[in-house]
Image (cartoon, rainbow, N blue to C red; front, side):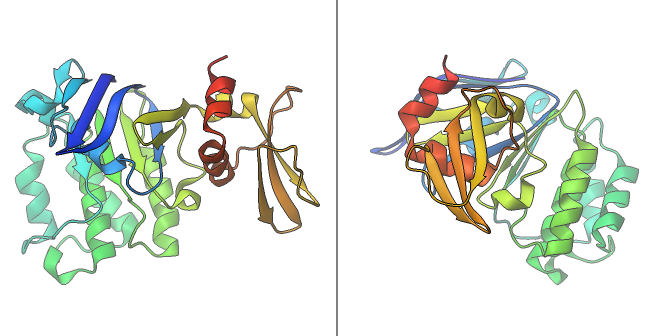
Length: 275
């Protein structure tokens, strides 16, 4: 669905990406992870066509994204981390903008609002940031675009709303669509995102499914720290220790521990996954 090939991008003299390549497939909910400043939001803006690569290509459904052609824009919805709600009732916002998306489903939009406990008759400016975000997410999913990008979707949501968010996104995913969730709040989305993409400065450290990860990386709970492990993380009852999976015993993937393991063992991880 999406193909990024040998892409580079810089803000003036600050180089963000240098020759990265990445492919995204339909039917997936990707988790986009990375430390602050590695370019997660920049990548989402390049994919949505808001930024143009310095070199290389980014194509969605064979559209060069930077051209922002109408046939491209009707297949993508981007929710930034921060946005300013307009002085308009939610249902009017949806009615006005829904006409630009051929598969927009008003019933789906209103049902999702009910699930989120948001009143469609209230203006955005009268809502809290969390309520505004839930309204925008409801509209985005109702557009039924082929690609939906969400930057920190769980920010501003309370615990019950985060639970509802996971349920709603899971229900909205189809074999024809692709959803990308960029987040620092790994635990909020841990049972939802698959595959996992981990960005580093000028590089993609990992792009793998949970199944692929569990076949190559092993997670164990131990009473004490193991110096032979790739990574050890204090936990209730001891330490979460991470190892190369040399004995083909698959374990549950701990995404937070995986993220820290990848960052502290970049070359080893790339060797493991490039075998």
